[in-house]
Length: 119
Image (cartoon, rainbow, N blue to C red; front, side, top):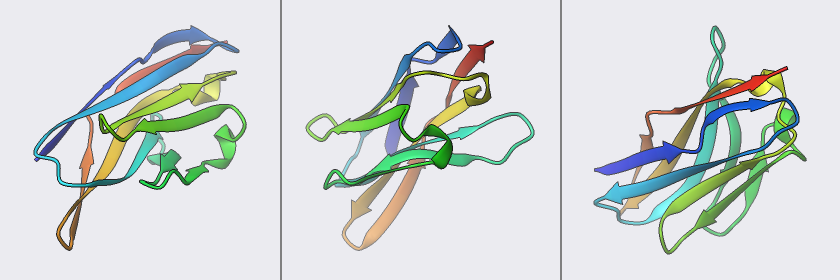
């Protein structure tokens, strides 16, 4: 089992910045893709950003140019730098990682961290 713990959420004014972190622990084999998703009230969970083990990244259209995802492979930790935050970024942000065990790829989710952006 892999446990994920997110941190760094909070309340910020529009235009401000936050940095989210997601630390992994437990029995880890080989972390592949790491990503951040978010879910606002009444909306579906959506991809914010993801990064592969090789460093390739992809972003949701609404955050391109404002958010940056990065990872520390030695510590199996993923970060999300969020700049120029907007009220519509308000959501619970979830960390997601894929752990490859032989031929089995298993996904794990964190419990989420609240990000609230005031106007």
